[in-house]
Length: 224
Image 1 (cartoon, one colour):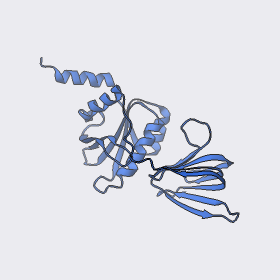
Image 2 (cartoon, helix red, strand yellow):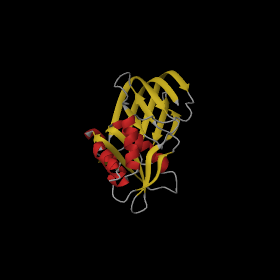
Image 3 (spheres, helix red, strand yellow):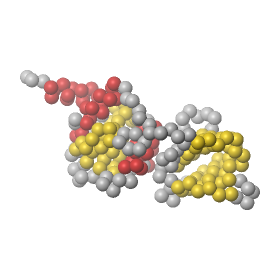
Image 4 (cartoon, helix red, strand yellow):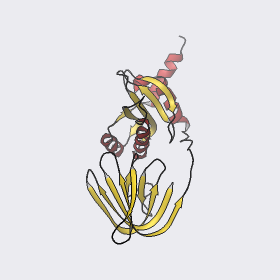
């Protein structure tokens, strides 16, 4: 990971145009190609970002400022002009072990793995915790047409869960044995903002009833 604190301007061009005027910011470049620009506030959400896969090129403008141009396969560009670099550091974080889920979320994953029809009719489980370079996908399935389906499961469906699934999908799409890969975001409750973002990313949303799934599990275990 590369972390740069600098006075910079940022310009985005793609589905719309956006501009961040000159100010001190943190520019984060992750090993997977994600680029995010943060202010000193606003919790976890960046001011602007580009998800992997991206290409990043560096140049110098007529005023001698370093310019980073981030390009996505969809034709989007993020132009970061560094007017004054305060710090520039690199860190090798290695392979992340992934998020450890609490008991309810882990059990929900287990229930859905044994009852994929609760997500969509015809789904067949390939593997739980399917590995990628940035962590495991909760469930990898095949649908009735044989298409790969990556499923991320949360108790509460929020924007960060959609972003997490988006990153997994970008890695899975690189595997010719899997692509094209469809994404499904599953939770007991999905926030409206997460639904909007999922729709923009062509990710399906499914809400499930944890208690009903537990009841179905209990009925299957009965002898009488």
